[in-house]
Image (cartoon, rainbow, N blue to C red; front, side):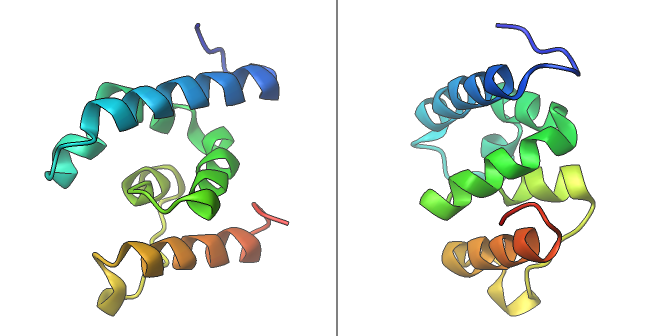
Length: 106
């Protein structure tokens, strides 16, 4: 499946899920954050740009996973407090709060 910059939301969501599944499967046993975040499927998701933000935030709301690098790469922001770095639940909450505050989540 290919992606154009004007892909309909349903196609984008389907490709996102396909890539996210591949990323999860192929990084499940990795401990290196760098290897996890530089996986080709993860990088393609980052390449979606702002269109990926609501999809990633929806994933975070269902199951906290290391989507933080992607969100920071896409948005240029990092709402996670220094004390919460490395704490997946707290990091997810910070990004979900950011999503609500910035209109990405209802």
